[in-house]
View (cartoon, rainbow, N blue to C red):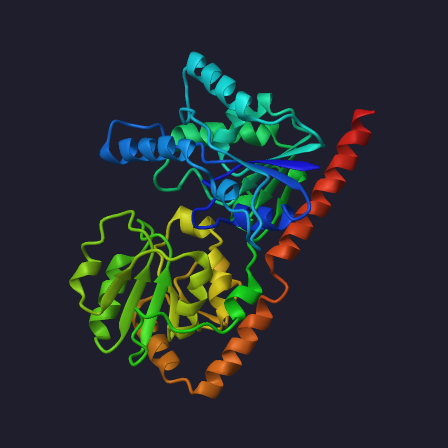
Length: 383
């Protein structure tokens, strides 16, 4: 079989789809279609810049095209579609389909559609698919930065078209038809995060540290972070990742250090040399439905974890300490800072054992088994 994937741009910070398909492409052809967005473009500086990025990417080699000597697998092809996201006009939809169809290779084996974005539904008729999977890793009705009305409508159409739905959290799974939905939690690259790594140059190892990596977005509790930093001037707070919201509040504390996003393979070095890793999220629909990749990565690194209260974090108690107010956050930070080297080693061993059966290889194996079962069922049903 072969996979045709509608996902984010290949080569950006890896999503769960990239992790799973990276395992599968060792055994199957994978044709990856770069992001077809979930927000209609506007004449804003951000959207104009993104348009030029897309145009430039269309004219330059993809990582898979320009890398020939590497141990890291790449898709069989990376397709960079020049289509208008969430097109509502029938003529524009037809043009989109014509453009993308010309970029697709002919089917050589049973073709599995892996749709990680609801916008994929507008292109299913040109894909010549044998099985359609909707892989839902987010609550698109609450996700920041999307056109919720159009995204929700596209998702409903995709739910109806999909043969299988894979949801990353129980909250998301409950949204979909039970008879064709399976829970597929995120995994983790165990060896990558457990393997000892040197301390990055931009971390001050002489002081206790609290760290977070990921998008600095609206769901991050900036007010909480500011209060924690003010209460603990002797501790450095590191925020590692792209800025996608106003972070004026965070810039008021001298001991909050914002660092740019780092390649995924470098993250273990930060985690292993932070005193505490945190998930300081606001309480909203998106967070209640999420299953952050970084949660298992934190645990696989052996770094003690403090989190806001949300379902995915609760599942890993007591290795993840849930803090419901500022006092609990501060008390837990103090307790972790006072751990002896032996106590930290014991914690790391328990945390790594907790996620030892949650590797991406195991998740990909689950996916393969489900697909084969559904193909057999669909073929027998067609007779």
